[in-house]
Amino acid sequence: MHTEREEQWRVELSALRAHDLWRELQVLQPVPERGPPAFMGAQGEPLLSFASNDYLGLSAEPALRDAAIAEIQQNGVGAGAAPLLGGERPAHAALADALAHWLGVEAVLLFGSGYLANLGVISALVGRGDRVYADRLNHASLVDGVRLSGARLHRYRHGDMTHLAQWLERGGRGQAWIITDGVFSMDGDIAPLPELAALAQQYGAGIILDEAHAFGVLGLEGKGTVAHWNMNLHEVDVIMGTLGKAFGVYGAFVAGSQDLVDILRNRARSFIYHTALPSALAAAVLAALDLLRHGDARRERLTQHRQHLRAQVPDAPWLASETPIQGLLLGDARRALTVSAQLRRAGLYCPAVRPPTVPADSARLRITLSAAHSYDDIELLAAALRGIL
Image (cartoon, rainbow, N blue to C red):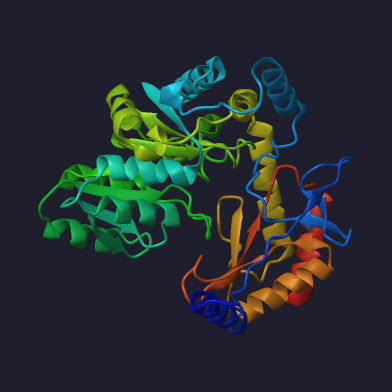
């Protein structure tokens, strides 16, 4: 017997199908002899993924696997407790110290995921009555963190410093915060951090910078947007980074002053009440950090892939990003699904990204490149795009 509540769910699910917004999990099996980005689909069909955030191709590196296995053999699988209640292991402390040293900050705090980090950071530092100025294309976790904080949210047009300055000029009560992605996850463009920092200084605002898609890809040693713009770390108050993208593992961290980390350790609810990251993952990230820091060849390969794709699809103005993320805007959700299906029939996996992940009428393919791709892989992608678009 179906309840009234279940009937409402059925109506909502039918509406999703009718508007081409239905989502299902896709199970992909890695191909052992090559590893990512080569996969097999549910029917055993070979697929080459252009949808991964594994930008440097580190997820299948033997050094990461060996570090995780060694840690599991010594300390088991799960942490078994929250970090403050006995879940902290030597591997966590070693990783936090190594990340802080790499970035040149006083301290680092580890979180279970980037989503948890953004929720915890914003709700711990930003309060009711404060003012938040956020880029309109910020990641959902940043938006949700502001909502949780209860602060007044003002969203400026994407990358529009004049619009941001107009908002800041109006002023108001409470502290002012500027929150932005370093690299925007759907378009791959880079935030104008020098201009943001200048406005922050002029109007007394703090900056929270989400470097999820920048670390490992941009700047000296992959240090992200701050390094890309040759800026001083002290121009940014809070830096968040994820460990499941260019690092190839899982988890997140927040970097900054010792006072910042002390505040978060005592006030960030998504840190206090979450089970600690498995120490095996911390050990794997520590191994990844060494490869990432010395990954100039991998970063150069990404640049070559991007340039080659642009040269092979010359009539594609959407291939403008300086990062591995290339957003093919298609507008209509059905059109995005159709193009995605056409690529899949060509052996290329690139799922459609549709609302609410992106705004209405901006459905797209989010094509992501990896250092693990070969020259031939890029050739296949380019040929398929030329035949479809």
